[in-house]
Length: 493
Ligand code: NAD
Image (cartoon, rainbow, N blue to C red; front, side):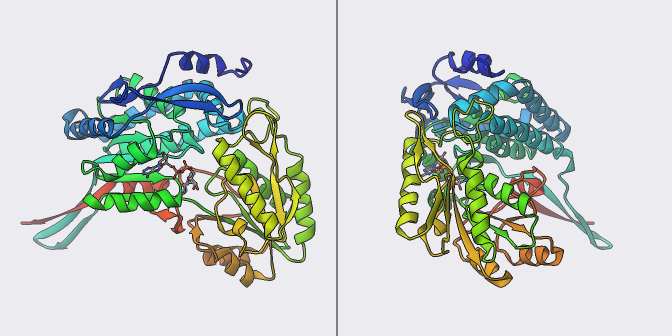
């Protein structure tokens, strides 16, 4: 268990505390079924922990608690400044346990410690960013005539059901907790059954601040088909915010129609990263490699379709393969490791299926294309060049360290091919021509565009998808709008 990591001792102590429970109404309780789920360390395939296997009955209890808490004066009646203090206290607690959370995330998810360390910082920044919002959630006034005026209020939506994936839990838990609480809502959170531990630990730290009334934050772990489905159907939940795959997003949208829940869906992607011949090539290539290998490609905005101008396609493909092929894949606790394992045996098998598909479709495999090691779910960084946008590896989200390099003829062709996807989450543009950069940024149908950078995250920058990459936006002011309802009031005098 790598005792040399500064957070390992604390992480181990916490793990030794026994099976992890559900947080309902301010208490840590076992699932009503009494069942637990085994959590594996993806680097060793050994049991790391057991988490409660919640089901519909636990969701019912959590929703009832969240509703009581929403209506109670201890939460509803507090000032925006008090909500700021709650969130700042949670962020401080997370900061004090930074190393422990980084170690825990690496054990649970397999991401290298350089990435889990960065993820804790992103988590803290996001909570603090939303801590600043409560006193700045404003309405409008409109004095329509001499004896009349109309004003608007932004009020909390109510009980929010928050469903997360496993890929970057530390960041996503901040995004699912801080904005709804900043706006005065209450939360029922369901982390992924594959990586729940840091969400549970952060919920514990949040409770330990002593500032959250019981029921304001509830956590129900368990499987998607039971806990996730119960949340999306639940008549007592006013809003559902889901981050995960497009297929599950569709079922959530359908299930949430019963009581017309407000819905935010942050779904999959197949993001184009476009390198024009006038780009700063060293920077573009380094970012392109990072763009598909970071977190072993298990990021929704991974630059999985790399469009390279036909005049430089072969040399760029070679350089990318050389760099990617030299990246260290290994124990996520080794400080020089760039890629840890992928999350599970199933995910590794899925990824290898796409390698077969690329080979069968006639793409050139430049490096990788294999699993690594005896134990742990390791996949080598894999580069396919000479890909066409019609091939399966260019159309479907792989969620692994695979890039499809696709040649393009000119600007128009790059935009056409970049947009020729059912997804529209993110895009990258590399050029020194500022006019072209802005023109292409507007022409690309994606919720986030990076110019001469790729994959950066800042809580001020709204994120979300066009097309089948989702509905709505999170981060920035957009989360505040998404967790409030507008009420307009007319006064005649
Ligand atoms: P997933 O859709 O399989 O699962 C996500 C969550 O939904 C999990 O908690 C799961 O238990 C739950 N779930 C599964 N079936 C459900 C159902 N029928 N009803 C309700 N909930 C259900 O996704 P994943 O494999 O955990 O994560 C990978 C996916 O997440 C990728 O597609 C990736 O692009 C996407 N993602 C998107 C963003 C974004 O912001 N757009 C960010 C991270 C990940």
